[in-house]
Length: 323
Image (tube, rainbow, N blue to C red; front, side, top):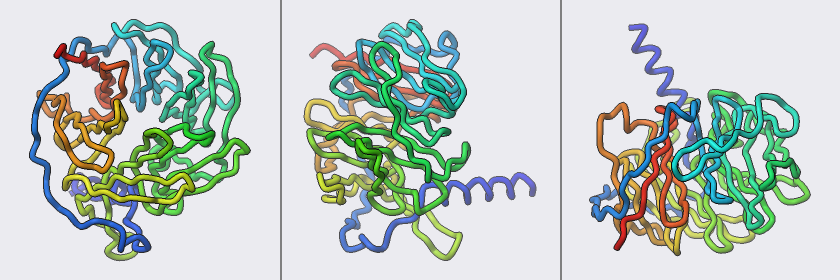
């Protein structure tokens, strides 16, 4: 009985964490509920699996820049830098509240000058580091209700001199995309949405991890629906595309005019066009469930792909097959 009560509590927390869909946009949202039939056309081969040697603890995100992979080592409050072969180059930062110190770093991205933007979630800020690992500046989001287990700043994109950060939070007023301008003014985009962001040309795209419908106060259910949003340059939600039913995107990247998403249901890397139409599955992980759970985040390194498993603290290197 105690285990059942604990399970119900966990499910209830997860339900609140990812939010409920907004009724204000109900006339815009599609209503398709078709599941995905995978078209598997593998284009990659796993050539590297890096785990114990990196001593990661609940890593969250990655970015390939300066011919190196930068990983937010969330549980160890630092950034880990490795090469293509998984060799540790260096680590950046330590636990704390000062410059180049972190509390629960999550998202990471880079700009055209190879500056690194780190979501320092526990300190309610984004820290910017140059390619020489020197502190440049920070963007603060002091109002955000940080909680280490239930409310964190999450994914990040730098676009048009603006920092965009997605959230995972139980506070629905902050289940949104946060836009921080150069003068550190803060604007929010959307309501009750939680997921991942990526830039394509001058546009921001957002993919949700799911949709939760509010039944009554404090009670929601998961509808199984997922959306891809295109954010206009005025920071308004533009086009809304529905993804396959119960797809559950764990991460999104852009490459050569396409979107690539990792499905936490199918454990697959899938190619989509910019209108959310599924094209093909370029790689699908297979194995025991305890090895697959936690797979979610991907990033490109040239034509190759790194995939992160946050539960097993593992980085996979997928080499593009020669055509």
